[in-house]
Length: 440
Image (cartoon, rainbow, N blue to C red):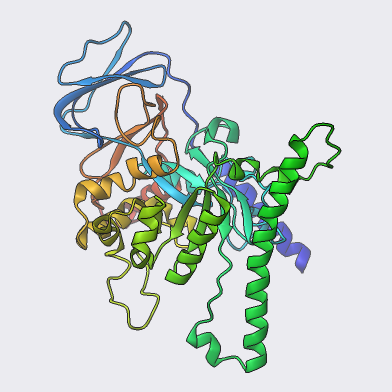
């Protein structure tokens, strides 16, 4: 029976792959001029009835009137809106597809310390979640491994390409750490006897000790490697820590409770490393520390319930505005933990924050410019500026509104195929109701 089950899932995966009809766009050959639309630069002024010219994958001119280059293809987008592509700042994009099939879940390695793991090399370009996501205007995603204490290195993807190399916007964006919490909730304590509580405390302390030892060992390892006449044996896990120790790669620490955020910041200061907080539910309680050490927060979804019984019902919805008022750098993600299947809803997480106080301009930046700044790619994406990548969307209206449709998308000047499985199913079942005479 188990062999029949394995064969069934193998056929399911094969059918999924074969049914994929989305074709990556070819490199841009001729200049393209988008004419007549409202250009939302995000970093600057909004231009009514503007023109945007891009060539060889880069934006070359923006304004009320732009002189076309030779062989320019002019596209009339009068009445439409032009925005930079949106950016999902944390996900397992390309690393997971069918949760019930282990073979399609490639985001977690065994063991506690996996600093040598690279998410990029495991990305599956034909993943069915990718076209569904970009069809709603989300053109970039940070994809990250999970599991263990140190999970490995994340990467930033352009959501279009034949191979993971083509999709890579940044091969290594952060080192992922699941903070070893020292907290035991009252609910957990109620289910434990004294022995279990003590064992849990010992395990938590051991995990934190292991994390600290890994950093100490990595420093000793790199000092030995750099010394003259070194005979130090190669260690992939410790070698991968070099970019974290020299400050060129930040660590992204998952932490929600104030006590965990505070201890994580203390660790970053002690180790002299750059840090990004992922989750940040209680981040406002640590605002002085976060501002003092300039540590940004990636809000892991606004569509989530309060963590504690006594919290306000809108604690998650209002978190972005409370962070903004506190002067903490932040951006918004759509994924709480590993729910990559709903990454397409990213703009609606930002919209929820607008409903609970966040200015609309800030909400748009929280899913475009701010994640690009936090993750160090704002020289290429996040806003519409001359010299940046021509990675943008053309929409019927405000992308934070559920009624808005993304009609065109370009990534580095390549026109993106916006067809996807959801659209095909929509068209299929339209035909069903037409055949029944219940729809026109």
